[in-house]
Every structure is written in structure tokens, then in C-alpha cells.
Length: 461
Image 1 (tube, one colour):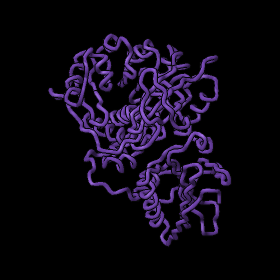
Image 2 (cartoon, one colour; image 1 turned 90 degrees about the vertical axis):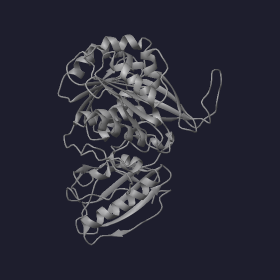
Image 3 (cartoon, helix red, strand yellow; image 1 turned 45 degrees about the vertical axis):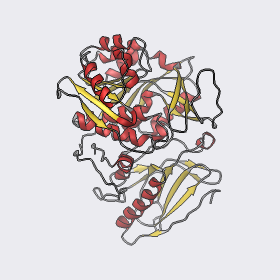
Image 4 (spheres, one colour; image 1 turned 90 degrees about the horizontal axis):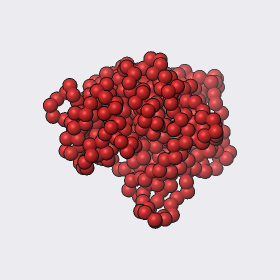
């Protein structure tokens, strides 16, 4: 065994399908309770299960070894807890699968490497669990009553791709201050890429449009998208320009301070807009880490769209006015709403008033998010009074990717036909689940993780 492997838990099956479901469910529930998340899986029909916790690289590998004559079928479940930047190079980006998906498909293996253990890419593995045979989920007191939609949404994202450099600090620095923090962590980010990953993990077919530099960071970002099953064919390389960077400080309470160097993102232009407008899609998602003219141009194209006006530009009010009444959805937080309206926005009740004011400026729907307190929705063709959705009580570890998770989740729910208030509730639950783990993309949840963290059943099957 590789150094750091421990806790061997054998499970022998008589009825392989039933025992596999029960064993995997028990193991995954226990690991999820400790903060681990399922990243990649392939299933088998017969054998014995064992759990190996590799503390050296911060991942958990569940190994399903075949006891029969046919040694070709085996299972590896790769689960990950937060990893350091040094260990991260040993754990390539792997696509996250929810527990509910394990019984419904054929999956190919990813790869996981440590000092003395290597799991190479493998061929396809057939589904061990009959479709419809659910793997036990973590117990929950409250569950959403929204019926699951079965349409697989198609989401196109036009936005930024950054390499995030994160440091945990005892407190966020003020002007002129220096604080000493943890070792730097490098991970894929950028609002556009984050929203694409959030949507993919929640059941959408996602196409990403944007720019990266011709450098190692750019190649890593493309590999990360591909590992998530996202179509990155429309992400172009900007020659002679570095990939975008985000410098992130996170304090002990999970609050963050972010500075972005846009790099290649500022080279998004008319050709990218044309690509984003082409092809089949149910909804378009656009965020504001790319040039303003490209945003206005792409929003002028027909079809449903979400504008996440983050970060808010200096001329935020004029920007929303330029988008015009053709803008379907505007999503902002309190500070971004304040930038558009020219007044402070504070708290959920004020966010509801702000959402109504924003609809008066053109968008058909406006959402103002209020962090842990929830979100407010106003619609031009909806109820006279704005709708407020209370936040979910979770233990926040890192809030960096919460807003992007909310937007990606909202896009999936709306594209699948979920009614607007229910879509906002589901998106809020996804955002709440995301803050329970560190990182942006690394923390973005699948349906099972949303259920475990908030008790809400994700409404898109």
C-alpha cells in the first residue's frame, strides 16, 4: 500500500447489486459527513469493497476488487477532501458524480496518483446497479417538494477563465496592512468557468466560450473543463497574453477578498460573441469579467439569458440600461445592486425592494442575493410583491464560489423548466452547499451534496 493508506473495510456481497448499493451508500454517507465529496466512479457486479484513506494527498479511494473469474470488472471510487497545492499536482481534475447517478450510466475511470500508488485510466465499466435502484442518501429532515424535471438542459457560458491563487489568512488585510497566511493553493476558477462547472455537476450539457493564454495555466484550465465533461472547443487561446489570475485571501470565517488580473479574458470580442450565439442552447449565462461591449452584443441575440453583473462595472446603471428590456434575468448581490441603483442595499427585505427597482429598469426578472440570508426575486410578469427565499443554515468554510454556484444552478433549473421561485430556492441551496468546503470549483456540489447539506432535493433529474 502507498504511504498514508489506512482503514480497510471489507464488504462481501451475496446479492451483488443490493449489497453494492448498501455498502457504497454507507461508505459514502460516512465520508460525506466528514466533508469528503464523490468525484469519479465506475461500478462492478461482484466482489469485496474496501476503503483506503490516503492522507498524503487528501483523497479517499474506494476499491471494489473482483472475486470471480472475470478480473476485468472492478470499481474505483475516488473521493476528495481539500488538498494542498503541493498535493494537488498528484490529483488530476476529475469529474464529480452524484450518488444518484451511480446506478444510471456507464462511466470510464479517471486517474489518481500518490507516492507509491497509481490508478491508471481504464476502459468502460458497465453499470452494476439496475437503473432506478437508488443508492441510499444521507438522512435529512426537510426535503423540497418540487417535482424533478427530466429534460437535460443545454447551457452556454460566455465568461472568464482564471487560475485562482488562494491563501487562508487569520484576518483580511486593510489598506497598507500585511498578513501572513497559509501556503498558496492553485485551482481552476474565473466566474465563467465556475458557473460552467456548477451547471455541469447539476446535470446540464455545458459549452464554455472564452479565452485563455498560451501558458501552463491556460492548459490546466482547459484540462479541468474537459474533465468535467464540458465542451471547451470554443475556448480560444489569446497569443502573447497571460491567462487570467485571481488572487484570493480567505479569513477564518470564510469571508474573502479577491483581486483579478483579467489577462486573456479582456480579449473576448465579436468572434467569441458569434460563437456563443451559434448552436443549440436552452439558456445563455454571461458574467462581467469580460469586456462590456461583448456582453451587450451577446445579450442582443435572441434566446433566454442570465446576466450576472459581477463584478459591477463603474457605469453599472448605464450598463443595465444598455442591455435593454430584452434582458431576461439579472442576478446581482447587494453591493452590485447598490452600484446599479445608486443607493445602499442591506438585508433581505431591502433586497426585495431593490429587485423590484431593478425590474423597473428593464430586465424581466431580477434576483438580488444576500449571502447566507437568502435571495429576493422580482418579475415584470410575476406577483406584484417580490418573492424572498430564506437562506439555509450551514457551517461556512469558504464563500469564494457561492455566487457562481448560485448562477450556474439557476441556469440549469430555469433551462429545465423549473418555475422561477422554485429555481431560486434550488439555486440558493446549491450555493449554501458550496460554502461548506474550501475552494471554488472544488467545492461545487452535485445533487447528493445539496441534499446532504440543506435537505433540498435537486429538481432536475
